[in-house]
Image 1 (cartoon, rainbow over the protein chains, first blue to last red):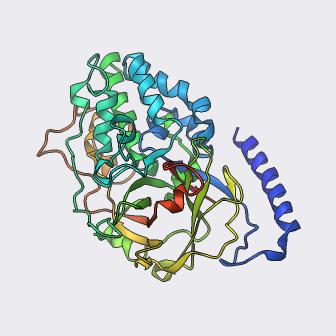
Image 2 (tube, chains in turn orange, cyan):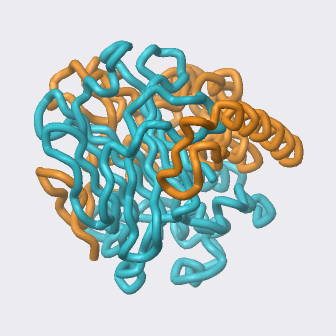
Image 3 (cartoon, each protein chain N blue to C red):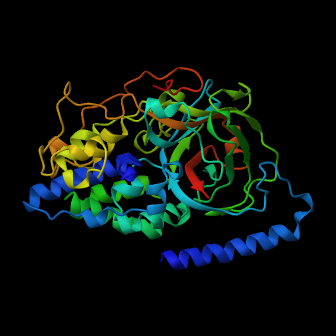
Length: 182
Length: 243
């Protein structure tokens, strides 16, 4: 798989270089590397749960090099199997998680009120969605998979929160929002 | 093992799932051979996205996008921390609901160390969609030094540099619950090899493992219309790193 990916990447890179070379008159060289350089994706992240929660490690590279438009086809079955088989939850929990986490996009409804922002609020409350710095996504994930957030059946109370509810440093209310380094 | 600290929520839940399996099955062989993830990313933390955030900015019509990488960086390592000038960092936006990027923001770096410069291109329609990309042909929208705010408050504002890692979790307790997933080196590797806990620590005893640790952050703020232009107000955001 790795070899095949590399071969495909190399072939596509050659094609892209050929295309870029054919119209190189307006080529710019802002960084010194040139705009004809082909960059190959090695890492991808949308939601803070998907890529390593539910997918076997052998499939992480597959996800990392992939694109959201094929996420449902490529990863939905494995995500659902994780929830039902490993976490021991109902199929309804698995279906709900798959529906909100795939394609692996951080969904933002930019026309919703700012005070409704938060991870998955677009699905839970027709809110702004996105992901805030203060969102406790670990607990949200644990409560969905092991707790009673989506179903009262087969919960694991000791695993449904890590009891760390906020960052060690306060976030700023203005740009760049993240706290200064330590 | 850096992978264990990256895309960390995923690991956390997987680890907790492992703990549940242990509870149910009674015993489980060490799965050390499962620990190989994507070696390229594991061996190069600068290729690793820690977290992606999207939230409202200084006014309701502005949006903030954040991509963090390279965590954990200790305070001693922070003065010289810099991005990889050979990598392309991107935030991609689907505004038509098909999971294909309609706008991209491309972030590249030149130079090394604290004198590094950041260049932000876009948001703009990408030259190619999918996992192989070339740089946008437009000139950088914003460019300047790292570790400082650049751009304009009414247009695109950008900051790329060292910050406190905004993520928080009790990673140490996770490794006590599932020690077969703990790293092979460093402080956490010295935790007991056998499970020494079956649940998380109570409030007051739980500890944020990332307290006092830093990350390299790319923070961008811009009018939301730059991302929704030509599409819907509902968008999907994701981050990528390419080499």
